[in-house]
Amino acid sequence: MTENTTDRPQITKKFKCPTCGNIATYAGAPGERIIVTCTSCGSKGRATLSGTTTPTIGFSTNGNAIEVSHLKKMFGDFAAVDDISFSVKKGEIFGLLGPNGAGKSTIIRALCTLSRPSAGSATIAGFDIVKEDSKVREHIGLVSEKMIMYEQLTARENLKLFGKLYNLPNAALNKRIDDLLGFVRMEKWADHKISTFSTGMKQRINVIRALVNEPEILFLDEPTLGLDPQSTAEIRELTRRINVENGTTIILTTHIMVEADILCKKIGIIDHGKIVALDTPANLKKLVSGTDSTAFEIEISNLEPHMMSSLQSLTAVKSLHQEDPTHIIVRANGNDSFDVIVDTLRKDGAKILMVKNLEPSLEDVFLHLTGREAREKVTENAPSQMGGHGPHGRRKAKRIR
Ligand SMILES: Nc1ncnc2c1ncn2[C@@H]1O[C@H](COP(=O)(O)OP(=O)(O)O)[C@@H](O)[C@H]1O
Ligand SMILES: [Mg+2]
Image (cartoon, rainbow, N blue to C red; front, top):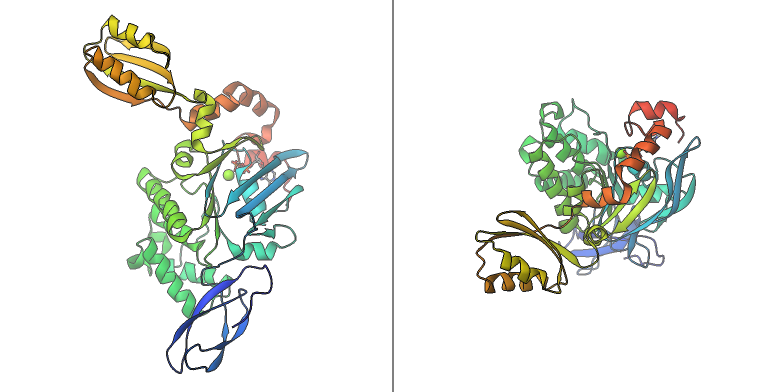
């Protein structure tokens, strides 16, 4: 067995001894040829540590899978990505949220080494995206905006083709493909042509295609774009399972706020190439609602003025508003305000039919941070942002890698 003498990523692999059948685990660098000594009978053999097993190391020492520092990407004199910094912890789902043309895909392309940043730096799994680009590629999977799939090939043939690009040995690749097809419950469609699949089925195959090399970090660029509600829910659930069951770190870009809210531990809101907010969904919502204030809508079948007066006199209640004869909106401070409000109403004989927590949505946060007015003004001045990544904008700015 080889020794781990560097801080480079290591993988572990189980080998079965051809002499005695004993199975033992060995570690080494991906692709490394090692001499294996059977731990049971002592016979020796050669083996290659192909990248088909779970990596054990390979991240910077502070536990960050991704570190981005002052990243900038210019197209001519237009800054599509403008001085962006963030980090993603190992095992986290991080959301890049922003409208069309905000710069999300440009960030993803740079982090996946598909284009060079104009300034700044980033490390992926501890590797520099410019100086160690091929190492970065070994550790990532990418589901880009455009589906990469050969329609006339079957699901299995497509997966095999991409697996071959990673030089995976046949046996390991076939096993991996079977596992992945099982993971998305597509075994029985394995030998059907992609052209016969629904968009949702195609996207499921497209997502597992990015997992063929067992990446520690997966980039999902608008994975639910153009999908119907059922397929959208399916891909969201798949994203969650990849993260929870495989421990994969995921960067997800989306312009669907609720998607980011459901899936992401941390969110960076991007607008015009800049990060305008970076926090957990809960903390982002506090930007709108105020630090510890909560709003409730309460329906009371026998609402009377003395109940309103009682609520008004509570120190926890910041504001009170009657919507109609049976509905009130209460904004209150403090974590225990809910209990205090309900107790007070009950003491007054209120018959409470419904209480709804009116937590602001991420959409409220986004509008709060950017505002429609500013967007329209900037859009007029920067025609390349109209229509996001469509041909309109690209024609204006010269295509530069
Ligand atoms: N290769 C390119 N050449 C010129 N401009 C580009 C290129 N790629 C993207 N852009 C421009 O950069 C901006 C950000 O695009 P993009 O990252 O695709 O946005 P998003 O993914 O957030 O919708 C847009 O204005 C787009 O037109
Ligand atoms: Mg995009």
